[in-house]
Image 1 (tube, rainbow, N blue to C red):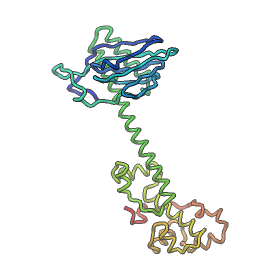
Image 2: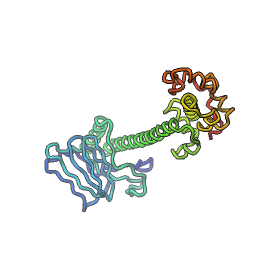
Image 3: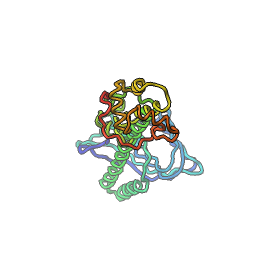
Image 4: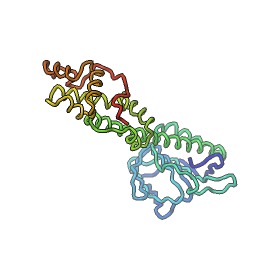
Length: 296
């Protein structure tokens, strides 16, 4: 947040502005001298700064900082309605705190509850118009705290979205290529998490643990190969990533109820299209997440 218990905000000017159809805001040669909390209540327009253009709509909120330049204009048919607040952050000695000496929030966010946010800003305006600058400053602080809260939540949601996509792709890869060597430690590091936390996230997203998912996909593949190919059981064990045939046979029987050879004989005597194992449908639940102990 841009202030803490040692700093506070000081409002320099504020207002609610109903833009005219031909409104233009050209600050390309006149940088901001202070902060400006700029909230768009309604209307349409365009804002450009640093080579990037924003399509303005109701609910948009910007926190411009000193030194910035920009250009904005208006949609003639739907003019903008804006509440703006110019302010400084000052320390206990009443000195203005420079932007580089404080953590700065994001420039832009979309306000998820604009009615609530507008009520805060209207209370700020009301206090300021009644010359209650302390009250106005308190409401501005509340608005900035709401901005900080939204930025934090958006950051967390983005992080959650990124890890969700990462786990989705990993889960697909495990099911398509169960024979590969998957290291929980390495995969967790690539996602930016500890192995323990990544393991919890993986189960939260997929419904099964990392080890369970790999074991299930390997036995799924083994069932298909046993029913549809002439590979030996030893070859199939190697193909699915379990080169120890005795370990493979033990695990296969544990999770299917029959040995690999029994399954092959049974599958060949049936229509494999109706066989649960041949199509990857298992009625059994994996009972031990420690299977395939070579997984790290």
